[in-house]
Length: 324
Image (cartoon, rainbow, N blue to C red; front, side):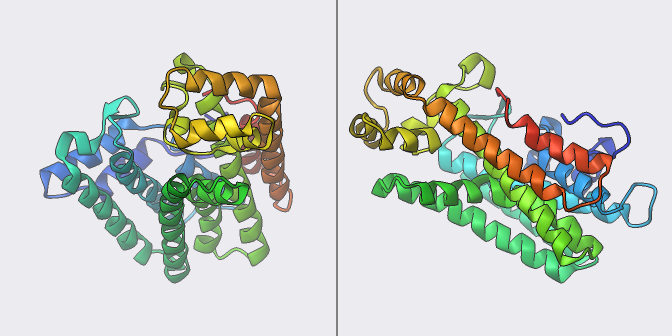
């Protein structure tokens, strides 16, 4: 969590509002909504929205803060809806240590509950200042998320392992939503275009760095630290950045074969992990993460200095050394 003293972050009031928005007369939907609130998590995306709004002068002491809270709720609902669908697509058993919704309630309930979240965020957006621009931005982001998810499967199916495809996938999986979280407060508050662009650039580059770090840890992290088995992407045929770098090297044919058979043979994951350690791929990937994090922090320099801006920059800086 970002260390701050004088900035507002998602708190108990945010959780209460999230619970209120998710209220339903249907018990199964209510239970899934309650699971979302109870699971908590870091609330990174609404936190970005809160901080970006405060960079632009909003605060809990000023009129209109309720709209900032609702905007953060909308960002979290879009994220949570995508996770409900992702868990079903990925056949996941758990999410944040809890049994996934589709395992508990079935596919139909899980998918429709995700759609319920999307409908509720649309209702919130309709009541906000700048609702037309905000609705367009959320709709565009939702389409990018869908395209990124499908592209990821297409790449694995066609074995189209390219850097361009990878960047498009992680933009859809992660960076499009952090970009929205950072930029949407500018739409809500009517900030100038150059301010919106600076916040969007921060959100984009931060999200790219975040996902690259996640992908690196998936291959080279320690299971006890990251909380899941290593090599999951490799077993799903996903060519992440360290794997793309390996494909360029002298062991590229061997790594491609492992990817194509989705690490089905005993020892495949450990072999690729060893190659990554020996070939310099680890440092090369970390350098790209540092570069993206630096671009995120640099984008913020166009904005007035404040504790909220420093907190956003600290998020980007954290990606340089994150271990889980």
